[in-house]
Length: 112
Length: 115
Image 1 (tube, rainbow over the protein chains, first blue to last red):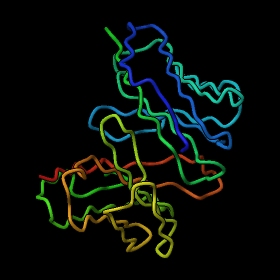
Image 2 (cartoon, rainbow over the protein chains, first blue to last red):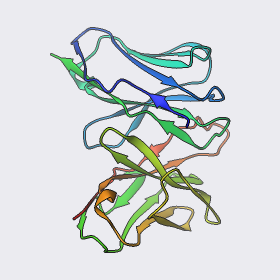
Image 3 (cartoon, helix red, strand yellow):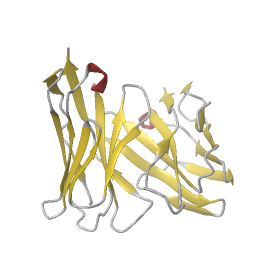
Image 4 (cartoon, rainbow over the protein chains, first blue to last red):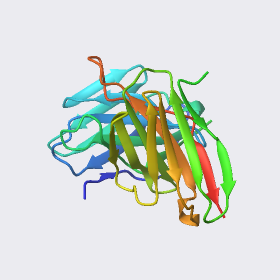
């Protein structure tokens, strides 16, 4: 069964620090990788997507993809208390452009 | 107003009752999805649809049915609700257009409790 694995946390970091969130996936055919942020009781919202090996930066967020090792990570620089949420990793299933496998999420707590 | 609207937002019902969760969207997207979220289990796909004539089962479709009444409307039914269907349900949409990134746009969620 194809899987996406994340450490459930909580991951606690002090305000201003770098938060590093990791995700591994089992399907070598996956080509699209997403990070969603979900506040408690709210719906997921997209933070970053990445398709190619390497780093992709957007403001304080950097997504890193290593297809050979089958992991994708999200770095949050200058973490703020408002970043406290659950971060979901999602991977497309095989070559599908419409089906996604979600990890169970990592809960991040940024301490003021 | 939200682009993807779910009703009801909260529902408490009893075992054996029929329940319908409704989803409508103003994003003009073709693809619509129903997901279920349980603590510690992440998001699981129940059904997805590409258009009104194309409906597909996801990984956990047993005990659920769907109807795509129009491009903008996709409803989820529990014919005879049972307690282990207590969960948070999300409707989502995605685009098939040329600039499609694969992003899913989620509704605000419908919290269902089956007693």
